[in-house]
Image (cartoon, rainbow, N blue to C red; front, side):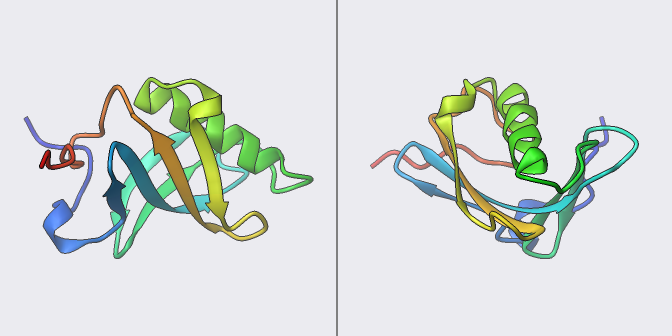
Length: 108
């Protein structure tokens, strides 16, 4: 089966682990025709969402979308940086499901 994500994670640093928390670097495209994860582009995970970039609506929509993708509650996702930028860093606490290219954290 071919992965829907074009690059192998070895070629990027769009995510890291802080114990059981996933730190994700996202480049957001608001006002898209549908919500979707495009793939890894350089150091960023490109995500398109339908919400406009007004009054925090895109950030809230992104959190809802990622919560569904990682099977966590919205309260388990924290926007670390990029509140008014397209480039964002998010913390996802103990994700239940991972995207195909994200490897689980190493247990020590």
